[in-house]
Image (tube, rainbow, N blue to C red; front, side, top):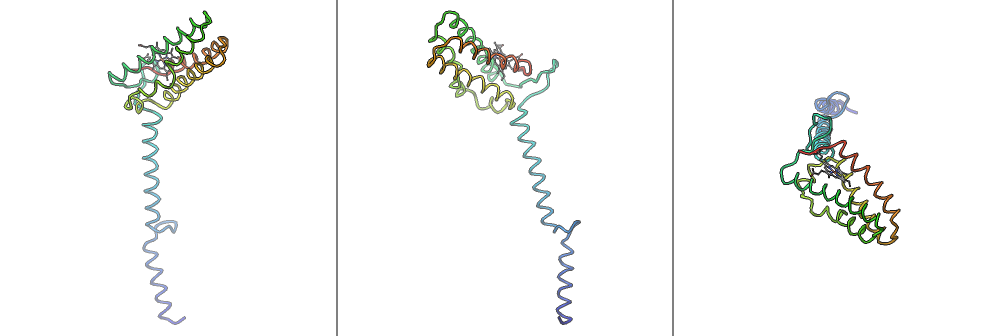
Length: 177
Ligand code: HEC
């Protein structure tokens, strides 16, 4: 290797060194990683806010308050009263062994109901509320289907007893305002 060649290699190394930040990572690669990290933090912050936490605050009684506007709260509580109506009608039907009444009462609060949920409301609900709400609607779907196919009131009663703890669990954790 002649001297000129060696000089070129040295100056090339000097250029590379100028672009080298700690740990030998080139500056642009480091900036890339920092940008990636920041974006990931922002994305997980947003995901936490909008998917997991929803629009909430801690209530004085320790529960989590769902912060809804007037029409969302009216819709939400109306759905809740429909749940209780279904429970009452299903219980009554089981006592009378009236399986068609079990079917129709359960169907009214099945997941067909979800089509009417305002999108703004969905976005405000924490993940836990969406999950428990959805599983309650689905459990009523299953109850209606089984009542229709099996016509077994004891089975319906045990399904109702499996649904009710989700109602009480959610009420223990959340309130609305
Ligand atoms: C995903 C959570 C959740 C589930 C599941 C749930 N509820 Fe509720 N329910 C609430 C919240 C939150 C409130 C408001 C409570 C408050 O502000 O103190 C409420 C309120 C109610 C009310 C009062 C309505 C009004 O007009 O004030 C009734 C009745 C009710 N729920 C019945 C039920 C029944 C029955 C079930 C089960 C079949 C059920 N809920 C399941 C969250 C839930």
